[in-house]
Amino acid sequence: MNTRVLRVAEACLAVAAVVLAAWCWHQGVQTSDFAPLAEGAPAFSGTHYSGTWIGAATALIVVAGLLVIDVIRRRRTP
Image 1: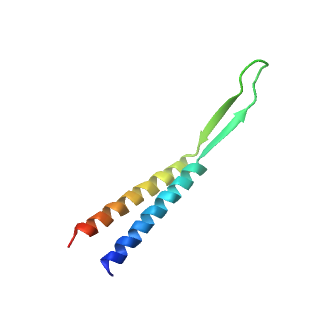
Image 2: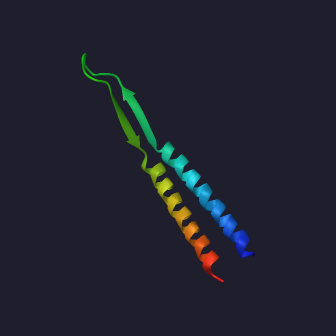
Image 3: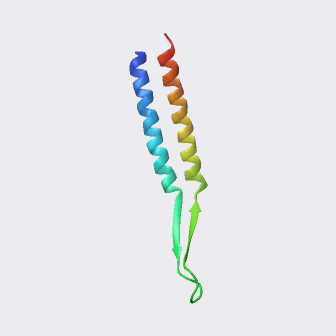
């Protein structure tokens, strides 16, 4: 396969992996707002992090990084 085509394909996959990682991260963070428990007390919010979604986002970032490294390697190889 032509190395230029492969480099472009890997670069596109890297961008797609980063976009998908951002979506996964967004899915993994939920913020809930709660009313005051007692009169005069302030309202508060809580944040729940889902390990599965955050882990998927991390794995996608690693894959994107490896793809970028491979694109650079292919570009420098004669």
